[in-house]
Length: 316
Image 1 (cartoon, rainbow, N blue to C red):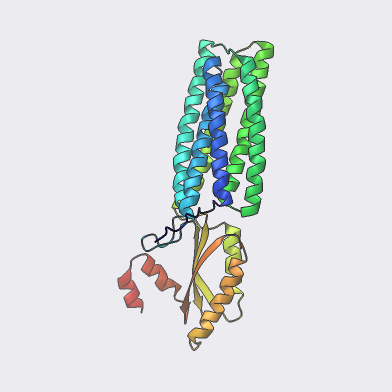
Image 2 (image 1 turned 135 degrees about the vertical axis):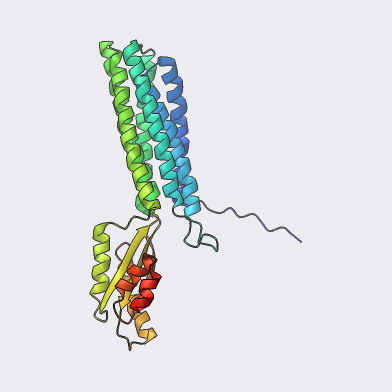
């Protein structure tokens, strides 16, 4: 019995993009750490730590995409899309702690009057970093445009901010080189630390809101409500609830239809509504769950949600 030939599973473009970004971040981390430690430059060291975080973020993104692409199963019936939000909260917390450490190093150098050595080597490393990061951003933007993947879009945006940080560090080094004032390096390092903490807050907030099942943006919810309410066969709707896990949008609502309507007709109406909702963002996955009511019973739904079953029974 001959063995079946091994067939490699092709890597998706978004996974390949995370591998490339992780490798680039690892290379830049290695170069910046060596020069940052040798030169004593707080801004270069801050950039090195930022590149370390970039590597961790890209690595997280690879596994997040891999898990998020897994189909729902008996145990995880809604899929694992929220793993990206969990990763975001963890990454944001680590980034915050790192920003605090960079600020500490900046203050330490500022008050202890530390010097910056090997400025020429530091400038060269930052020039290399700017060129490599610029090429990486261009690549990630192409992949994001081709796949419309939110993780890759976020990765591209993240490396755009890194490009700005690298330019800032280069400016600090050049000013120190020209003026000989070492405190400029410490001051720029403090600025980078504050900026990193500011960026981390946005990541933590977004991840937390996803984990707490925050509703879709107001304009999207309004558009969904307009689609449901404007159908000529719908007498009304209530209990519209929305959320997202970044991979898919989840929508639930109750449709008020004619009591004599057949189930087949009700199903056809719901399919028409669902098709229009999906067209609001066809690149995103959608899980839409309608419920059919012969009359408006929103007050009963409110009682059930509050756990007041006695009041519901009395009301019925």
